[in-house]
Structure formats: structure tokens, C-alpha cells
Image (cartoon, rainbow, N blue to C red; front, side):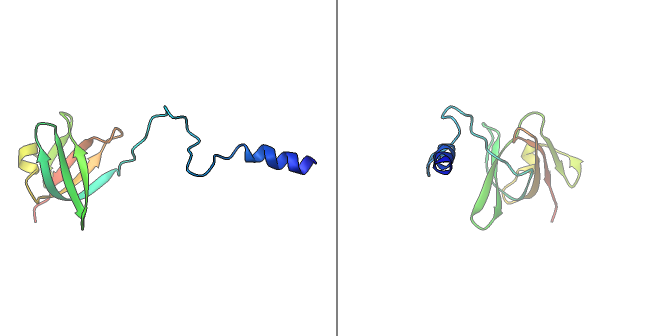
Length: 107
């Protein structure tokens, strides 16, 4: 009797398949890579976002702000000079998922 009560009690702790144990109003968390490397794809100047093609068909959207440092081969530059189509870049993200720095490398 004790064993069957224990099994029933423990089974109540497990969420059924397909259901989350988190409350419905829990915030969703998007995990971003700390660094993104690849070629610049599209740039949305108005919304301060761009895509980095990281290989094959894969790309990642990146947002920048007034704190983002832009460099070319280690020298300070501007977003317009760095974010050229197909330029090879390395992006370092901050803890909020915004680009802390974007470096373009000469080929």
C-alpha cells in the first residue's frame, strides 16, 4: 500500500508530455550566442538591425545601439563603413543580446 501511494504521489509531480511545468505568464528567454561571425547580409538602418550569414542557409539577426563600437581591422569606424554587403564581421554581444562591438576584417 505504501509503495502504490508513493508512485501516485510522485506521478503528480511530473508534467504530462507536451505541457510545460512553467506558468503560462512566465517570460520567455532567448539565448543568444556571445559571438557571431560571418558575412553581412541585409541591413535595416531605421531599426538598427542587420543579419549575419553564419554559414550555408543559416543567418542571425543582430541589433545595435548608440553604445555599439564599430571597427575595421581594430580601428574605430562607423556602422555605415562596417556594415557593407558581404563584409566579413565578428559581433560580440552584450548580456541583453545587443551588439557590444562589430569588427569588420579586411580580406
